[in-house]
Length: 314
Ligand SMILES: Nc1nc2c(c(=O)[nH]1)N[C@H]1C(S)=C(S)[C@@H](COP(=O)(O)O)O[C@H]1N2
Ligand SMILES: [Mo]
Image 1 (cartoon, rainbow, N blue to C red):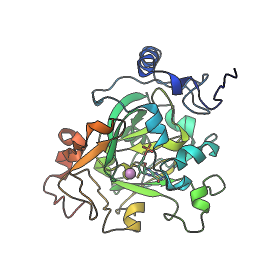
Image 2 (image 1 turned 180 degrees about the vertical axis):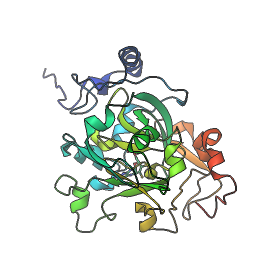
Image 3 (image 1 turned 180 degrees about the horizontal axis):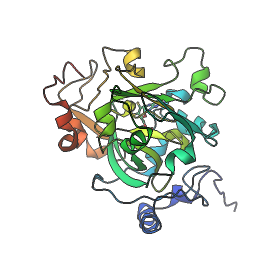
Image 4 (image 1 turned 90 degrees about the vertical axis):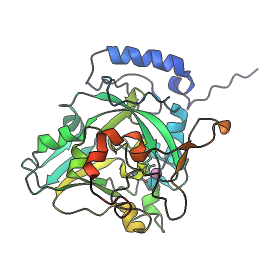
């Protein structure tokens, strides 16, 4: 009998969750901070990565790796949930450079390694709530955006932070499409206090490895109290600016997607309710669960919006 080996499947795909957790505690016990290149991984080119535990991690059960890396939004690779997993593998993520400019004392263009090097990595297990009313729990590895911004020394006039994704149609089929789904580059932005909030991270890995391309390799933003589209992927530029920057989904449809996009069960999307969500991987019988104000992070972030009308500033 012919025994078929699936060549695309690596150990991480078939490792049961418990075995993964054992391996993770091993990684967490090893010298934290450094990106170490090793064998195997969830996807091609993945390298093991470790990070210190964080007080900001949720105790919610992490979503399976297969769902986190197989059900994605990354329109540069197509608009179907499976397109990023199917097409992002071809993206060249090394070498990678990232520019930090605008209203800073120290503008610079860094090789990714040099941009990441000064920062110790942490594991941040965060809830992830897409505006489409589904959610996951993702064990990110990364560092606080605040630390990267401090290094650039923002000037007093800096009020917002603008982010840009790579434009490379030769490797991003969604950017080469005749009728593109969005205007490129994908752009996002935060108010400076939101960017400096300790919950806001730049992620370079998940589940103990470098980021899979479909999740925004080699570096992406994670803002866990906002809808997922604020978490811009594959970042090449971070600019400190004095005015609220344009954002991709707001440009696409300002009536449906605001600049703030804080998770709010009381402010419905014009076409659907935001009161509840479907937790991916919870099983067909699990039903929907209530969506929490600020995605459950109100304690850490609500004070930034005191006195603000969250229905007007959605
Ligand atoms: N550049 C870019 N970033 C992006 C997107 C995108 O299409 N392009 N999609 C966003 C949306 S809608 C979501 S929900 C998250 C999905 O992240 P994940 O695939 O890692 O779960 O990425 C966000 N970042
Ligand atoms: Mo999303």
